[in-house]
Length: 122
Image (cartoon, rainbow, N blue to C red; front, side, top):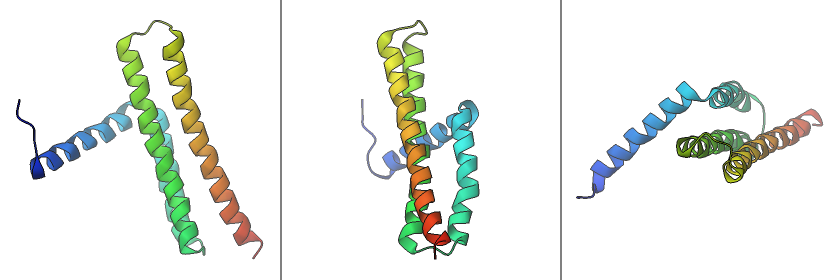
């Protein structure tokens, strides 16, 4: 089997990425909610009078949440593909993915809280 290389590989990878985003939007309510949150908070980050580095952090942590959610959804899809019966390792994998999402959301709350606190005390 011949491997795709060069620009063809990049085009195919972009297409697969688009399909992944499409699947997340169609099948993952949590991803849609986090995307909506980002659509609200990213413009707010640019509207607020904050330092450029603060703005970068505010936006970056929102992207991090969506990245972690995509990975969590991928883990859940693979676990569900293997079998829907209860298994300790399957449950652990799903719980760990969920913990990663929660951790990223807590990071958003911390970063945004710190930045907003510095704005408020100015």
